[in-house]
Length: 159
Image 1 (cartoon, rainbow, N blue to C red):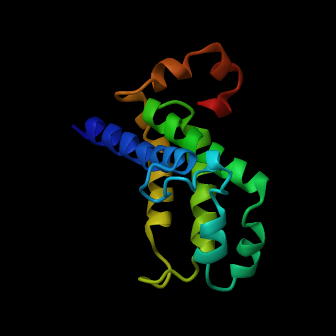
Image 2: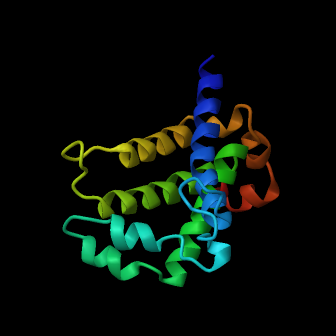
C-alpha cells in the first residue's frame, strides 16, 4: 500500500511539472492564454518574474524577466522534472534540480502571503527529496531498470 501511495505522489508531482510545460509551450488556455505561448514568441517566465515577484528580492527576479537563457532553463526544468518523476528515472537529479527550482520560486515570493515562511514550494521540495530517498521511482516506474543500465552504473548521479 505505501508503495502505491509513493508512486501516486511521484506521478502526481510529475504531472504538476509537466502540465505547465505544455501549457506554457502551447498556450492551452489554462494559465497561459492561447496566442501567448512560448511557441508564439512570448517568454514563459516574463509575467511571473516581472509582475508576480515581490519582496526584498523583487529587483533581482525582475531583472531576469524575459531572458532567453532563463526561459530555456525553466522550460527544460519543467519538462525534465515531469518526465523523470512520471517515469521514475533520474530521481536524484530530479530531487536536486527540482528543489533548486522550487526554492528560487519561493525566494521570488518572499515572504509568502499566507504564512511567515512556509508555502507549497517548500512542501513540494521536501516531497521531491522524500521521493528520492524512498526510491519511489522503483515502484510502478522504471527506476529499478534505469538503475541497472550501464549509463547509470557508470554515472550514478543519473539514478
